[in-house]
Image (cartoon, rainbow, N blue to C red; front, side):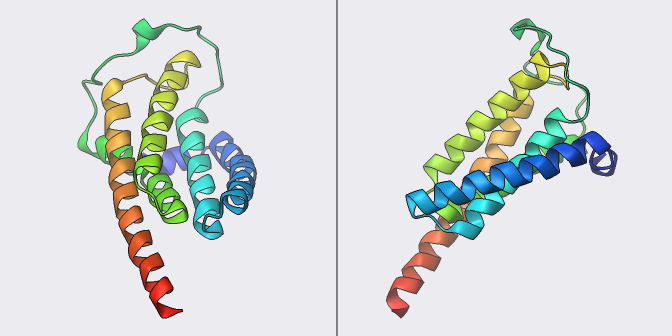
Length: 163
């Protein structure tokens, strides 16, 4: 499934443009906030990849604000799809936490991004709006933010003792 999605030209174009724009924005934000720049850029690129694979599979067709099109469970989601949903926001959560040295903020960003993606899929008819997918995406991103935040705290603590 991942090979099919990543093999679509629209996904690759959205990823390339998004990586440049979001990576640059993350760099500028990191400079302004005093965050680690390289992980911030990787977080921006990770977000671009997530946007590309969730929104770039189909042409945009604005369907209006029809929240009744959202369902709580997908019913037919297999284990591989659930695994992809779990992994989708993990790079964003990990790199954002390493960049900022925080856990809660990046975890909440992953939750917000997941909800926005699911609602956008329903609004723009680029996929299905499924609450279960938002939950799985959020848990994966939050777990990665936890790991990234702990790594960053250990890493920054060690670098302070070394100087």
